[in-house]
Amino acid sequence: MGLTSTGRTGASPGSTVPGSTVPGSTVPGSTVPGSTVPGSTVPGSTVPGSTVPGSVAEALAAVRAGLDYLAAANQTDLAATEQADCLRELAAAESVHLAVTARVLAAFNTGGGFTADGQSGTKSWLCWQTRVTRAAAGAATGWMRRLAAHPAIADALAAGRLSPSWARHLCNWSDQLPEDARADADDVLTGAALDGMELADIAALAEQIRARTAQPDADTGADRFGHRRLYLATHFLGHARLDGDLTPQATAALQAVLDTLGKRVGPEDLRSKDQRDHDALEEACRLLIASGCLPKRAGQPVQIQLSMTLSQLLGLPEADPATAAEIIANGTPVPPGADCDAAITPIVTGTIDYDLLDKLAGRYPGVRSQDADGMAGRAARQLTVAEAVRLLSGPTGLAARLRTGRLTGPAAKVSLPLDIGRTSNLVPSHIRRAVCRRDRRCRFPGCHRRPVDCHVHHLTSRADGGETSVENCCLLCPFHHLIAVHQWGWRLTLNPDGTTTAVSPNGAKTLHSHAPPGQAA
Image (spheres, rainbow, N blue to C red):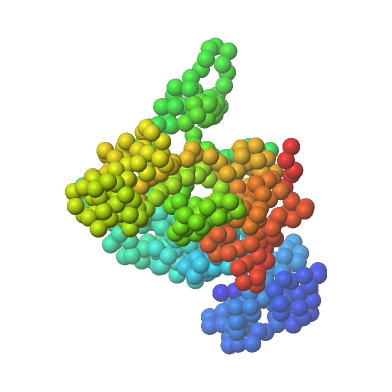
């Protein structure tokens, strides 16, 4: 595919002689049209002298060189036929570009190429690396999935014979058909488009195919459930645009809210229907927030139940009494989980030492340790366990439940809850608020998750002596906190100017954030 006209013979402003490098081109070795790239001639190409690139780099250089030439040219100097050729070929190039982008994205996504830059997915990588909005990134990944499911339509795009707008319609019509009929329908609809049939006639053809293939008792609503979505795009000065495709249940619930809160309040209420619906949605959100029903972190309360034995609490696998006394005298190390940002409920457990139990039971009058399996020995063991529970847990509540509800014998359970502490936050609320005010998003380079979706991460862990302070904490989303940092081993640094630097586990890659955020008030 190429321009059908040979173009202007004169050099355009800013262009260089054939074969020379294009000034300002970011692709090494890019050349202006007219130069040849090593390789064979493109089969079927209408551009005289065009050649097949020998590598991806050469292909990208050729694409960039052609676009640079057209961008630098004075379009008003072109003849009308040349302008028409440009418009037709650029439209075809847009189709090819879409098909190639979708295929490259699919390979990139399947291979997990985004993980090399510490990203959680292809969409977030696109937002960061190609500087597009989340809506644009979502559209790109949407085309990736759409064309993978419709290879015939993808091939027509790759050939430059089908426009993206028509391709979207064809995919949408085909998606409404039973899965086993979609491939044949794609061939029929694509063939009709390539043969010159108008879009309205293709729509009628698609309806005929749907009528012939539809199941009489099919639940049409089930297919639409997968298309549900809601998108909130923030733009100028905090304003946003809301768009979505709601399920019938969500539609009914939202309509009930709008009908209840969006009524006119009197003759002086001159708001339009759209304005009243907007204000009703805002009021509904305010009421929900004021009710206190919203969880505090990322959709659900974050809580860790940290279970440990007395020995683990003291820092050793199974500490004997002498070692335990020494550790208590010298200080207790930081327990497991102390470097996590979550509400932690500590649960201390104990394991019965049967040899010690038999020895203690042998101290009762009339009972010897060798006779522990007898009736008197079993009674002594039960009494010993009951006294230990009462000693460690207090005279009421837990000890009674353990004896009557959980213990049918002294060895019925391998571990016994000895103490359940009160839930507490490792990061005080005032520090969390200051960190959220300062960071305003996940601080891993390229990520923009909101504070409500983030954890507070200790840059220097508590286990290594790090303090819980604003200077030693930053916001990280769950993926970058729990996976990128704690599982993969990325290291994050908060720089003096407020920017962040992330270093890969092997040190081969360093990522930098953009401009520093505002300082906390």
